[in-house]
Length: 481
Image 1 (cartoon, rainbow, N blue to C red):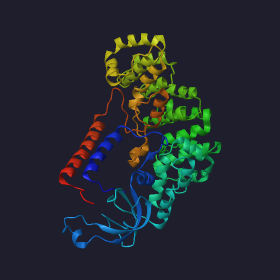
Image 2: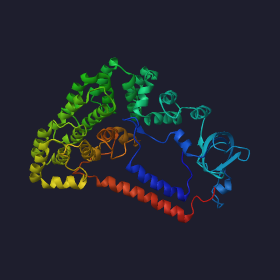
Image 3: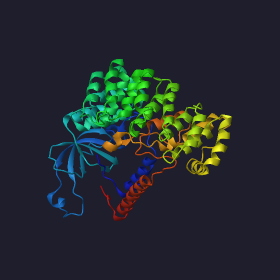
Image 4: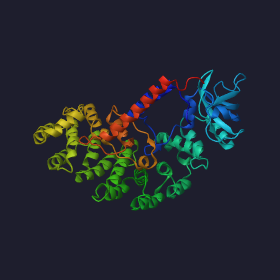
């Protein structure tokens, strides 16, 4: 739905966009991408929501620009879902309409302000959609019971309902998915996962749901998918790995290590997907002991070009067993793996062991430039040789994984969808790890390799919105209802 906006609202939208680019609310399904606001969220943000029938199309002459006023259609309110509109004094709605709609068609229309509402562009709805909309107000605000309602619409033939149901699930915390548990339709989920026509973002959701309601009997199917060399079949690998490990437990780690962590021929995207899955398991579940997850991450230290991906996780989870190995990795780094040095510096700064400070002094002499980069990009890391847990958490949270968890989950690239992510700067190591586990991004950046192109794109986008807003304000666009 596209709201009709005034120039003042464009300015507000620009500020909102800038804030949204900086941080997205946390807590959603860890591997899912959110496509849009849910209908319930849209309705909650508006002052009036009505169902209305189109009773009069815009005048033909005004429609051809012979009037100064924007041509508007007339709708007769048939039912009020929210607000005062539709009472005796408000039986009619006038607003802009697009397309070749027919008199008598039914629409969902939302309004802001009041009593003279600024109405949104109407959205045509079927009788079935109307029945759906009528039930939204009576659902619990959150929890498994709410999800149980939307589950029946996930692959609905009406795209509006299917999209809204998916977004409700994608925004729900994993704890609520777990609460739905036995009410999930296991066989239907398996069918959707194996259907090549299932959209990628939905396949991710269904795989996460299978991790809740599935069992050992699903492991052969999942293992076959993991081993498949067809990228389309293996799409959504991070969610698939998360599901596999949730159901297989410790016994599944060997396969994941062999295929994606220790395997030097594994592609970067696949290895990163495995790391994302392990982060999720280590922060939100107890399916696999964290010690075993860390053991799997240690395998990446034998792949210097990728080791920077897991070093911040070791610091977050206070695994100081690899100090000597990391020092050697620092000393042996070449042009292909030089970026590993900054995360190693931050790791040693966070490490409470006395020898960490000694290693820092030694390594500073070998590569003072790396230390300068660490100070420039992560000035709050500090040297926490005192062993303060808070210092260690702060240092690790400001390390590369907090800034360089920068590989797109394939859904973002393939669907163009936004993603739910944690707000940066978590207060504790656990929160920082959870943030990294849920933060799907567009490309890999490290302490040594910032992405100026992404910065310029964001800069131009926000600047463009402000320019349009200022123009609309001066031109008087949107004045009058």
